[in-house]
Length: 215
Length: 215
DNA sequence: ACAGTTGAACTGTACTACAGTTCGTTCTCA
DNA sequence: TGAGAACGAACTGTAGTACAGTTCAACTGT
Image (cartoon, rainbow over all chains, first blue to last red; front, side, top):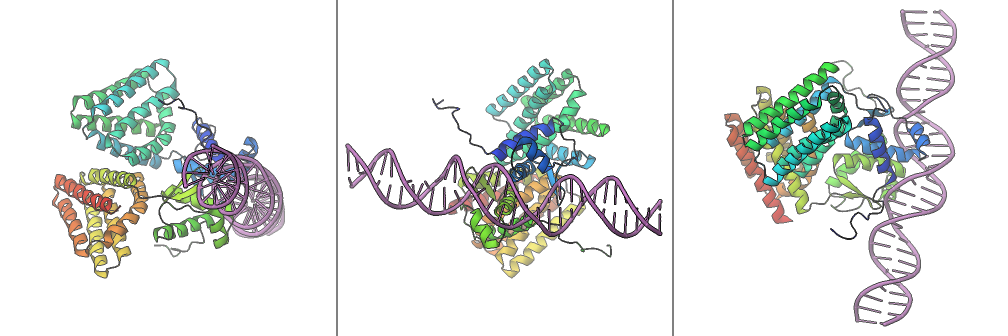
């Protein structure tokens, strides 16, 4: 801990801040899936130049929240059946591969802590908070793979996942959320790798099915 | 097969074309790793506006070839020890997870075909060609995961890998390349999943070690 | 109903301008 | 002579304007 900790002066660009802001708004539902992001409108509203908005949107593309279509600009990704399936399949492959590995004690701690925070969040009843902690829990699982690149990739998926997870979580009782994750945590802690993999597969399959039922 | 197949008019933007062009040049070594991409210079040379170059470079960032640093612009990724390790670790996790799955006969065919093409390429002696086919072979393995999102992610890694692989391939006899891959193919075809995983791990470990020896 | 036309809205790209950063070089003073 | 300050060129980040080409929905005439 240095005396200068946290003293950091704007190590970021306007475009990056815009990207963050837009990202939040999109997830908050200000733009529905499939909507176009109109550059001039946004630029005018936020008081920045259009090219800056364009850069921000390129950053959003990087995080997977929007896709570019030629001459139509940026479009918010839509939760088609195919998208959801592709997303959850990738998740399943990563998490099960992760669960098949032997965790270090540090990693085990991290997962346990994440679970505790999830439990705490369910008590507040704040959906956003629950979703956040839910995602962190799964991120910690993926970290068992010991691969920074895959961690980053999963973090990208996470942004999209939050979309869907928010919907799911609103439909579900907090206790259920806790139980589902408790099972996974227990399986991992028990050292029974096959069980852990199976439980994760379960959890994800169930989510996909509930999601698709809604679409 | 429609009568209109292949009839497609410029379904792409200048920025995209620039990104493709720059991408090629970077891989051909026109820019060394760690070099900065100077916007005005490139814009002037190619006769396009600076903001268009900026967009092109953002696309390059998307494919992972460059990274942005605030107030320094785009920098070609450098092959530090950490980078190489992170890249190859991700590769190893994906490919071994893939090899642990049971291939469909179609997937098996695809891998076999990829191998045959690799063999053919080694006979031409053209390094670029060999590297291409090598990468395709591994891409086919990853496709065993049945996840389009992971396929795309791996394709991204591939762009970076080509860098390193070109170096490695130049140092290696074509017959060795064939043998190394033959072993993997055989293991997969034999249905012995553990062996397949082990051989892949082997192959990748060997590559990393040779690479790091060079750095 | 429907093919064709039109026009507004918007994207893709170019050009200009300037403040703020970075970084190598020169200058300064001990 | 050498550490550090000051300078300046080169470049990035952002703003703003302009315009050609595309999309799309409304309008038109048949």
